[in-house]
Image: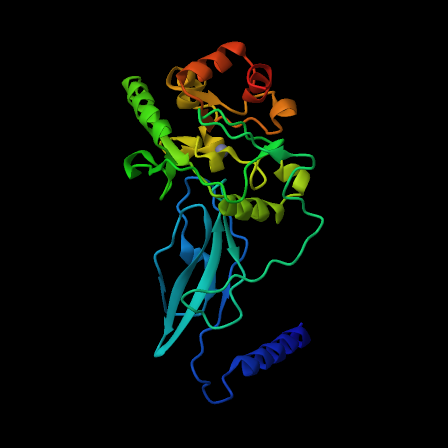
Length: 319
Ligand SMILES: [Zn+2]
């Protein structure tokens, strides 16, 4: 018994000698690391401080941009008299997921240049056999996996979405879309429903970056069921928006009273549910309760009454 105790004591003494400070104090240095691939759910407050770990005393985060796209935010850490500045690069995608990227290797600059994309010939950005969209002036242009918009196409009549009805910053949409949506929104409010606009017009380049971003997490065959390839998105037409019930956006919009009301009443104001449930074989997309396309009251009502997807209705009536 005694022997055992002695051995333990020796070990303890040994340990304590190791932990005792033996060298002179080193200059103060802030060690930190960026926590990559952090995901925040929709509606969850994004605490940027959780994206960086380190032995700093204080930390200050710049003002982060929370719109869809690629951004960076400056982080200032202090420890005694030492200050360290880091940059967190992050991406907010359509599903409102934040992905933190590796910090740049060089010193942070005000405008970091994006690293060149390595050539990936296996990724197709156009669907094989797709053709240019047949452009129409009556807001009925069909854009889907078969018909694409050119890289240069920007609608001419975009207006800013008032922030009071948007859950996402800096949104633009077709003027007539907005006019009709405001009437719809008021009528929905009479029934105690709050319908807002979330993600509206998107340029070819924005769609490209969103699509490429998804490809980092999912194989292309899967990404194609929930995200359009650049040029193939109705959002580029300026005639489609993803809706929100207050802050219930995208997937969270599904099953809300607002989603049901939109599905049943949207056509009275010119809007149709573009990717209905059970129509993936035809539209090529999973059910998107939130994505509404503006067609004008007359056509939207016809499409609604036909029970067809817009792809089918267009083929039967306009082709
Ligand atoms: Zn959409």
